[in-house]
Image (cartoon, rainbow, N blue to C red; front, side, top):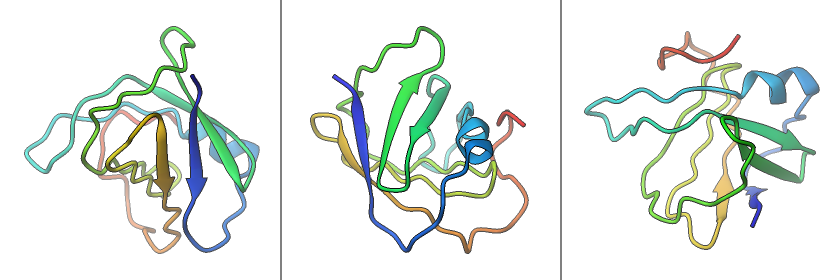
Length: 106
């Protein structure tokens, strides 16, 4: 099943460059981050589909229970308490600081 994320934030246009740049690796850390597979985000302002980059599958990780932050290009994605592949997405355009997670694609 596809992972469908619904926007739950103020309007922020998702351009092709932004979607392309949201392919990232999350780093292991002690700050509630978990290293995950790379993800590619495709979609429109109202609906995004997250595909696993490694094999193209669209399987949901139902055990996710923490926030992940993508800082390329400074957009915060917080899929917390994912249930049946459904989550909220928070596009926080105020997070305009240098990348805090190493390994994000440029």
